[in-house]
Image (cartoon, rainbow, N blue to C red; front, side):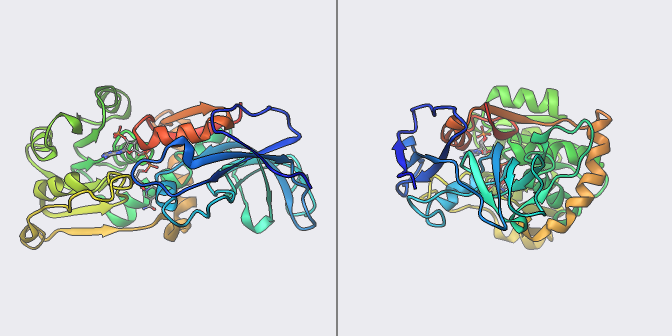
Length: 345
Ligand SMILES: NC(=O)c1ccc[n+]([C@@H]2O[C@H](COP(=O)([O-])OP(=O)(O)OC[C@H]3O[C@@H](n4cnc5c(N)ncnc54)[C@H](OP(=O)(O)O)[C@@H]3O)[C@@H](O)[C@H]2O)c1
């Protein structure tokens, strides 16, 4: 057995196929993680045991929940996990055929040994790029679709506000909400370029940069008549402002709290608690992992729209596995527009 050699995150890998690279977390961060919280470990490409197959990975997803896992769920000095697409290159189980592309969760590494039960086959649709299975048709798009159809129970003409609107879930939410018959769409994001992207590309009617002033004031300007639905990826000040702007029988879909993952001491959300009663509001969160049964419905709804040009993919694709840590850290600070994806160089 080859003894693993650790290399700093900044050293590019050899690029040869007989060397495998795996990312490990080395320490628990306080606040924003930095490259020193990770290391790349080089080893021989693993051999599949009977009942398993070797997958050479092609696309990796890095997600805000990985930041949460860094606080305790990711074991230190051990391979990390994440959503990944790869090609089976050697199989010792008839259920996994060499050459086929599979989805699995043994990510953050160039090569993974998987059992059939740990993998999912991807449906083949001509014209759907592989990366879409990590963005619009992956957990990201499924989260947006479940949030709108199952949790919000979106109604024709509902006016919608989305936080982190230029991210993976946010862009998918905007595009799907439009196709599902939403009324006015308002989004918030972290830069002027993202605001322009939301209005010019994604189909938002209005958008603002949340750095430009208190969210409540900017939301009141962007949605002067109020909103019916808030799809919340951020929490904090956004949540308080949206509760104030919601109309009677308004709904809040709590998807995530990315505004707090790196700032555990963030002040608590302030809002008028009486609003929830007097406006008969509903605030509901969910985990996409409890709604896997909706995946087929998402394909049936969204694939024809994508192929027909009514839906587009929003992705920031970073080339090279050696840049996975950099891409993850960049995503946490807003370096992505749409879903952050890493592609094998
Ligand atoms: N419930 C579920 O099952 C589920 C599933 C998937 C994702 N999620 C959640 O959904 C949210 C979005 O996830 P994603 O994968 O689509 O990531 P993403 O939005 O593509 O990337 C994260 C974005 O968060 C924004 N951000 C970072 N710090 C912020 C802050 N302090 N205030 C406001 N925005 C901030 C950044 O954009 P800006 O430039 O705009 O700041 C960044 O691009 C996250 O909260 C995630 O945890 C939940």
